[in-house]
Length: 139
Image: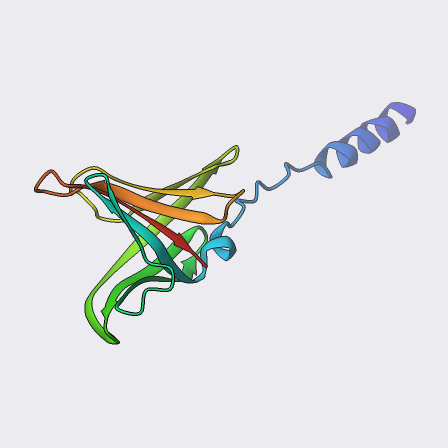
């Protein structure tokens, strides 16, 4: 009888144990909102956009899922929107580094980087004509 009671205690103890669920952290809150370009560098030449009343560039991001953003990039010249582009981004993180992957992008080399210390989002790359560019954005 003691063995049977011990067996029941072990059985209930083991059946009560379950694996902890692994929760994927969601990083979208850091990036949701409107980002404004502070400068643009093209082929080594930098244009400061802070205080520029003629041109502005914006990236508006909203969360559409865990670590997934819907983005709208707009260029405004003299108060008129001249260009806009929509795209989705998946976010992952390793240590202090965030990786942004543009969904469906099969084009040239491009990157998104976020620096926690400065709060800057940088995007850049090489376009199809071989022109290098980098844009720095802040909320």
